[in-house]
Length: 288
Image 1 (cartoon, rainbow, N blue to C red):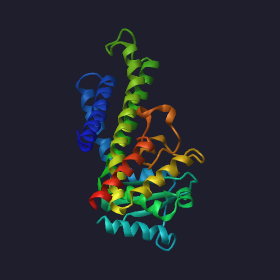
Image 2: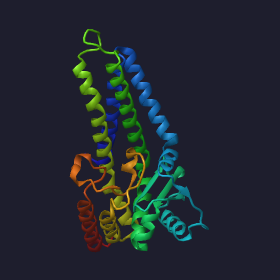
Image 3: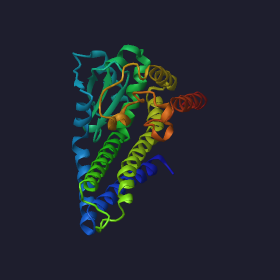
Image 4: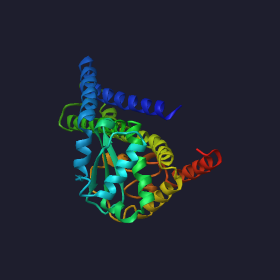
């Protein structure tokens, strides 16, 4: 299965989970209808507001060509090479070394980098990071991630409503809402499943963005070195924001190896580096 099909299947699973848990909260046809409306509303909200929410979550500030000339020119040059409209450029006031892109399409996109990443990466490695984020924009990954995060958040909210219903008498052992133990399991497992699906969507997109960046800069090793450098500094200055936006970042803002691959928003850095170095050899062999 290609990454695109896998991503579509995972998004469909998230929407289905939202509809199912809504049906459990409100029994019958009404629950299904409300679930469908909620799924549509969350997707519509993500389409129009995801960039604003993500940028606000990280307290990003927009910069001009005068305020950050080197960064701005780099984004402008790489955007022209990628045949993309010039995105808005933001800087996040954090010493955590990271970057992300957001926006519903290339015409409404933004690239944000932290102060920390500007401090530690040499120019060619920063180019690789910017090219990675521009590839996310070109692939429409920014919208995909926003939709996934919004639906996952809605599932968590509905699950919380269901738990309130259980604790405050909305579901008793004798009513028609079903087994309370099943409801408890749903309250716990539905948000967990939503998180796992959201993170799986994120992981499917990272290898494609890495490869796109390597071809855009024609320097896979620079991005590989940047990822290694970012990995080595992860956790030194945690970035403060809603964890739901973690998949947007180029690398985990905290070292989460103890959580395992299932709960990681990104593939292992070692795997990404290995794929980039393999691509470098292919490019040297074929001249492309």
